[in-house]
Image (tube, rainbow, N blue to C red; front, side, top):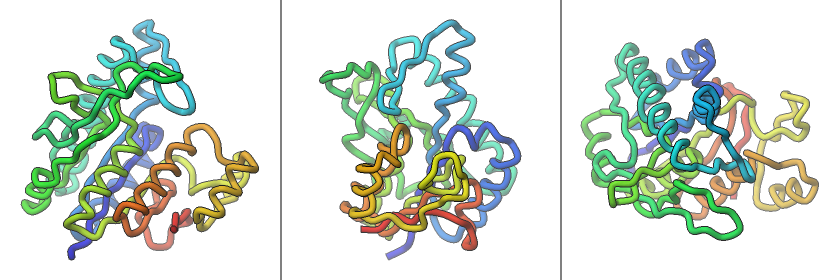
Length: 257
């Protein structure tokens, strides 16, 4: 079975031109098929603010009202996605920018209202493995923005970490999948104020200890939740780190069962 790397890059790295250049050069040098998933929350928040729209967050997740969804579609699916694809093409990496509606590739259901109404937020319900595989077989790199499709003409904002995890899980039916989360830190930190306090490996037991001690919070909570869900559903290995994560010698956090 062929290996597939699913790589998610966070918005803060995308906005740092130098770090993005480092990451993309490493990404194009990976062997075998690969998929890139990107966020962009910070830029969407900034542009929404300039337009006079307030951004609300709950437990690290965005509340997406109508105006926010318009901004997200423009920023994620347009500005960021196409610039990344253009950079990859300049590095001779044939790629295609996608959202969930393209090729019915990522179908989602609107998140039900419970304690919080997240608005136009979708939770992934189906990945079009055949469509994505057909691109990989043509040696085309899919570049997904964090927008899924509700199946009835409605686009949904979808957590990019969750999207990457769901893609990796679904593709594990036909590939040996590895999942990489590239963000601004070197990995999961034991001390939020010390960028060098990287925890080298986290298993379920260690994860519970970190939660109990409140070392993990905010945006890292859904990220690690996605990691363990993915490990339990076919993904073979998961790594978290900064722009140099794709290098063998990088300092990073490995998530294990």
